[in-house]
Length: 322
Ligand code: SF4
Ligand code: ZN
Image 1 (cartoon, rainbow, N blue to C red):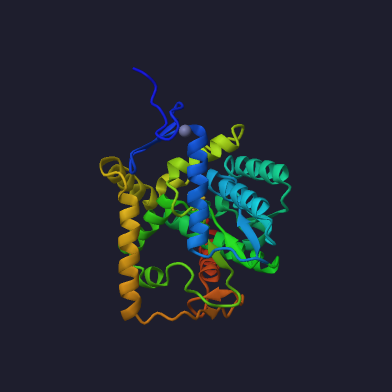
Image 2 (cartoon, rainbow, N blue to C red):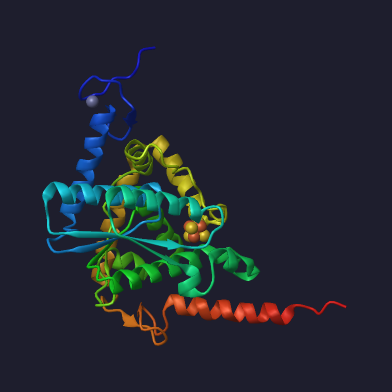
């Protein structure tokens, strides 16, 4: 059997895009991928001259690609946009160290200022420590996600960022859409992206939201062939998101392009709901820490209080050894 040929130039293809029928070689895939990210940025008016963009850099394939691409476009356009990276060390042994290595390598290579913060310093507990508190375990990712978003927003703002770029890809977006339905998170569905207006909230941008996960992986591997992106958080197996991902993967395999269709339908539903739902654009400020919140006390402070409560009980329940 002969090798498959690139639909555009006839060279050896490295990927088949089932949803479009295209087979692409390395060069044509790279430019196809980059054009789509550029289009996403333009269509969503993500970047304006004078922006100071903080990139949430975990060190995984997605965030590394976002940082690389924003830097590349920035240099190409000669725009007056400043970029810097923020990495949050969650304190997950055997996982965070490897990600941090990637993040340090990429920022050094691109000459981008890199700030590193940790759960331990900001929240007092690492994820490994939080996981030790048995009752917290089923909702561990909720703690992790809430604290991560909290620290990122706070630090990005304190460092003067006008935008916070994250690595969310198409699959992440579809997963979140389905999870929002499963959990009935009306406010989250209706607010969608960019409907929060508060001076303490740094506007999010997601340049990869139209890029399928497998393509981001291929792109990151082509750009940084020496880095290891085959990393998975040891706690991920416990997450409902992973099961939702399994369903989406199966659907996409049987019906190529369905991920785009789900997001389009989601957007339609969101717009229809927006007309009828009474969801305010304004958010409050937390009574404890002053950060942005939809309630009187923000999710991060609420979880911190819950953790401290659990910890007290754990200490209380330890029986003295006889
Ligand atoms: Fe955090 Fe859960 Fe993601 Fe692991 S899988 S990094 S615990 S959110
Ligand atoms: Zn080609």
